[in-house]
Image (cartoon, rainbow, N blue to C red; front, side, top):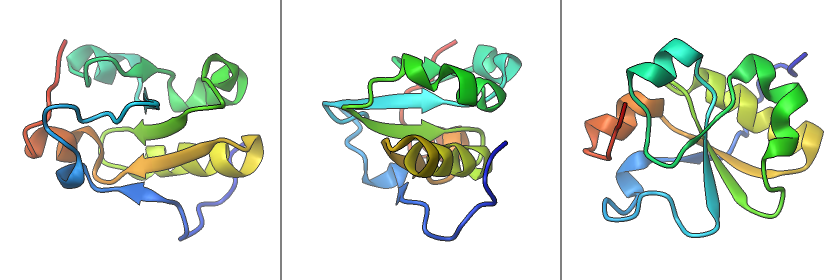
Length: 111
């Protein structure tokens, strides 16, 4: 279903995001974790589409915005980023380190 991961997946380091506005204007934050992970805490304003649902639900995303993809630690979101960029033609980047790195640098998490 998903292509094998290539080393050229674009990434964003959460430490480089603005703590006052971590999701830049014109960007959609996409969380591809499972429902129980999402329920345990997620970034405010994120769109939730589990990785397994992405091939049939990517149409819910605006293709004219940058997509910043997150998961728990960065592996699933890298696969989702690659899928969105290569198979669908979106402009997406993987959030390096996922929600773990996001919260470690003090960015907001809500339940």
